[in-house]
Length: 245
Length: 245
Image (cartoon, rainbow over all chains, first blue to last red; front, side, top):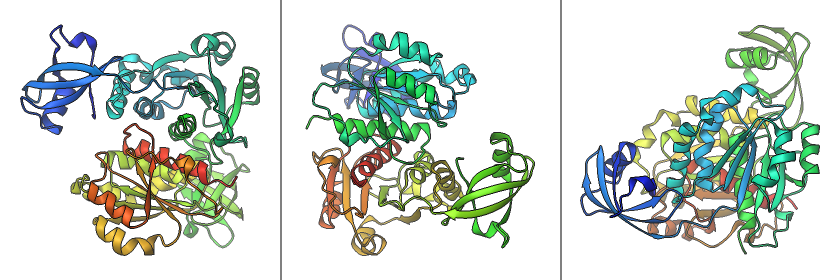
């Protein structure tokens, strides 16, 4: 944890917060904090700042906090992902919030097993701590918005213009020759939505659906990657491409 | 497994191979193969081809194989990585071989705990199956070379010119402004070695050591990422940058 995230409801009007559980253990055991130690803190979906340790044991830490620093710029990339196997999805949550993704839309596709949608890894009480873990790694405070949709066609045709109204749409594909570096990003505030398919790939019907709704194909390279590796790869490539020159 | 990898010693002179364990289960349960089914196969560090199923149960599969296809081009990037926590390293092996890395050099650094080097995740009998798993994902056959070094200074000063004699050297760093896209890759056969630091970063002494030995700093973006996310990110960015235009 490079930054300890605190829920707004945990901070009283004087700026004091009482932390227990994993965060207290981390502050005590890993940071080795003593009364008087100053540590980096942030409020979920709000400012960052410093917390002055008042009391500390491995099960309870009292901090006096001041929040004065803006979080990093809001991520400009959103991810539309065909739901991978639960084991892979579990590994992905923290990596996505660490890299910085504004919105995560998980969807069904022909080559996604419907049973994956019953996994507990899609329950907010399970995935939110992973998202928080990634934010603490990257010193961000903004929790990505998560949307879960079981019908790709309804999502693309009826809902996507509301979930993602502005910006470019890309379809990551191993079978195309269009490369990230050849994309034109003239607008320094450009927003992007990138769709990443299931390991078995999109069907022709799905590719056509995406293309009719403005998604332009872009290559992730020639190798077939597991969904978590594929997502981290394309997000890294796009982040590097859209960073203002 | 998008390709079933077979050791050369498992194939007899007629091209027949008997597979047991996880590969047999995969061929039977996931691929649903029957006698006569043709599946994609490859020989470790050699050619790819097709295997015609002769017999199949969930514990034993007999294949008649023909190997006629070259593996993908050899990866042009090597990774020098400050050894991450064993849990993170375990997750990384398969991703590295899937992305395509010719050589993996794991090293000590000031902010690496020495106890990490005692982890069983550094034993070939533990990591090789992970490397094979990643190759099967990416349909490659070439197992990355792995070198493990406990002394960074000795590695850089005395051994690196032997392990990595030709090509560019990069030091991935969150504190530099040099970007991947600004690197010049004029040679279409350019080889690259990229060094990725521990989560706590390199020390000034280490940075200086790298720079005196020809490593040029390059940014991975402003966010502090876990070692596995950082490696996948920088490798994706560099692969995209060096792919022949």
